[in-house]
Each structure stands twice: as C-alpha cells, then as structure tokens.
Image 1: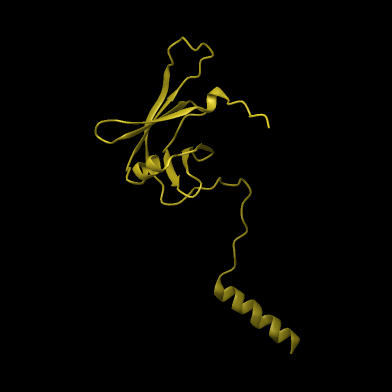
Image 2 (image 1 turned 45 degrees about the vertical axis):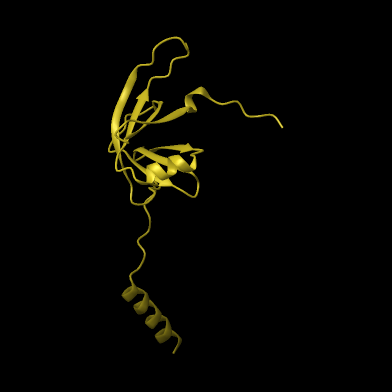
Length: 135
C-alpha cells in the first residue's frame, strides 16, 4: 500500500524549555488567532488547538510522554511561522501567543440557529393537553 505524502504545511514540533514550559511550533493558519485555547484529547492522542471560534487545528500522533507533560501544562505557548517553499530561507514568525486549556472540547458553531428545546413544564403542559383532547 502506498503511503500518503506528508504535506510540509502539516508538520509541527513540540518543544520543552528548562522551566518545563511547552511550545508548539507550526505553520500559520489563514486567519489570525483570537483567544486561543487547547484541549488535550488523550483518547485520540491529539491536541485540539482552537485558534479562533471557526478555526481548529488538530495536532495528532502524540507520544505517551508528551501527553503526560501536556496534562500538567497550564499554558501551551504557540508559535506560528510563515510557510516558505525555499527550505534554506529563514521562516518568519507571524503569530506567537499563549493558549490556555479548555475544560471540554469546543465544537464548531453552526450558522443555523437551533430551535429552543421546550422546558420540562412546557412538555408536561403539552402532555396534559394531549390527554384532555383524547378524553
């Protein structure tokens, strides 16, 4: 079976400094980050980086050691670089920012408004009306 070629823009690196702080180095997205946060998905062995409400980056293939360190991380430092085709040229840093852990995974927000679910008292009222109509 042929291996799928790796897109060079999908490459990332996790680094740890002497103080135990972790930095994620990756190529920049199309939009600027806003109030970034991350979720460590231990089951999928990945980081879900929420750059802004409509842009999530999945960093997958994490090793056990990385997961153990990320579980203790209060701030993930992110450095996004401009992608250059020329491997010999120096990469320009476009965005550098901290991302705090998210309590639970964020899901992409749908543009379509959701219908409000009736409350328990409203459901009881509807059930009572149904029973009265049958009687």
